[in-house]
Image 1 (cartoon, helix red, strand yellow):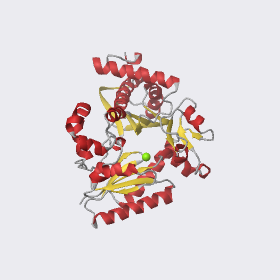
Image 2 (cartoon, rainbow, N blue to C red):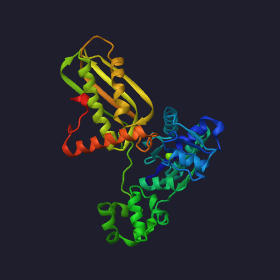
Image 3 (tube, helix red, strand yellow):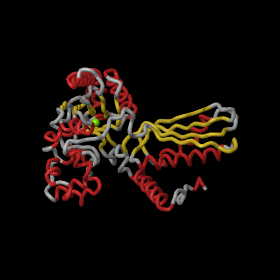
Image 4 (cartoon, protein in one colour):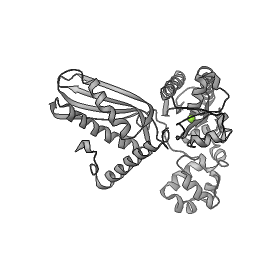
Length: 381
Ligand SMILES: [Mg+2]
């Protein structure tokens, strides 16, 4: 039988802060924006006060005045993430990373069956606690998404095994929010007609669900019945970076023109990032000289973002840093990396960021409705 595990670090950012500073251990800790920001990760000690991610930090401090509120140290989280996945790969090479602190391990083809696989997973779990001083929750199943649901069903530091054949029984009592792909609005609508658990969906069947879920009904029902056909891939399903390059017809030494062109590429990639509901922390710029030598420069911001006003002002500086030789260039490249989900934006509720976000969204909307280039920055004209 195939054996797949899902692991997910518990309260990752807050736990890393506690691991890095022992004074914070066993204390309520939240990582988030300043007084106008939101919480993006809360330790379990903070959750005991009702604090959760996306809550305004002001509210969190009202609930728990002794809360230690920390501005995110994303470089530190990336380092821990690298170590977490390195540890995992020491045990098995078949790891699919799906986010900074989550991934699948594919044990198919390994000798020894599920018992050996579970043993390996337990050893990984121990190593993480011992070396990184954070915990992961693991789920184990013969099917991919059921392993994911199992991994998240008993947090923190859960270890949930779903033996083959018992998938439907495992899912049956779980609340609908355990089903990946079911948004809060749909969950509420299903709740209004009395459907609260995954088992409820199976009981009422497609006739009741189709009007609410549409095309989503069939695959969701299949999953709810414990039949998941999703294959495990060891490549990341989402890109690890966003980038684009452009080759000029003719080489140029015109810095202003090159800067405008780089900004044009960057705006495209930021639009893609926003459409994918992601943010990036690192901007890289590359150019190729007419003698084919490459040069590049990059900058990592303290926090991830996907907003033009954050990234565009950096272009000139990076371009100058890369373009050291007095030789013309014939190719440019931009890359956005160190990606995070979009909800991790510390300044989500900060006034200036909010305005910048609205401007970007209006631009995205116009460009998608009337074609690319309907709205352009003055610098691009
Ligand atoms: Mg996590």
